[in-house]
Image (cartoon, rainbow, N blue to C red; front, top):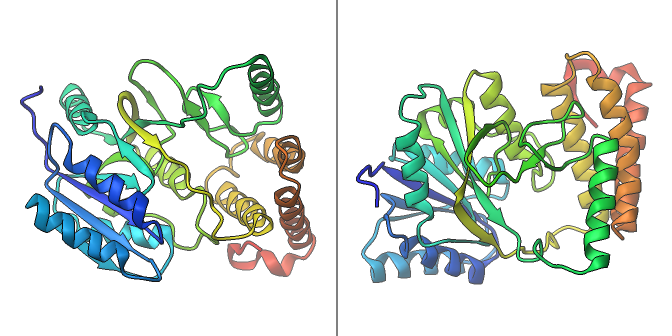
Length: 320
């Protein structure tokens, strides 16, 4: 075990997932290296999360800060940041289960990178239970999917950097390495840095890609991000069934367009890559067996095209 023990505030943003939250909290308390405090930012309709937070605080004799707020993931993350008193904040999705030595792995990485004065964030490895499934049909499907995404600048597995279209590639390196992309579901961030950058609260829906925007702005502000696969968490994926698939498709394209204009538009060739990726996205959703989501994406694309042909919509940098 490393002797370096950084001060870490664990921040969990939750909404209507009391069972997943309970499991997540238990895996945090079971860590071989303890965090300074656990901050639960709750936007649930009921009070199950508050009861669970108070129970674990009493049972485990640990500091648990419970904050109730209105829904909105970027807002919840920013509220958690303001409440954090640690040097670092560890963002954890409420449906993630941490490996017993996850916090220790982050601490070892901080010790390893202690001379990097521009370190912004360290992304851990999120394990999806279905990603190791085998079988000829599954493997061939993955190859086709990866090839399609590579041809059309869509998000895929890669080196952890961002594509000209504004979509991420998810780092799958077996060793720690510098990259651009981090995920809000399981990442350690310097609190001072995070409070200066903050999460963008103007994103629509449940704010898909809020972590990508945060990661890009970290790098644009001169900070470096690092991927550490030894810090691991299992993602017990909860369906985004709070909103219909059609609405999710619209939200995804709208946020993507907004963030592309915000962070990627100025570079030569990026607009062409974005246009190609945008045209391919509904096709990709159809290939994945998501026709309703594809319809939502097409609806958002039509709205974007209409706004581009109607200059009034572009005043002030608004997006549809």
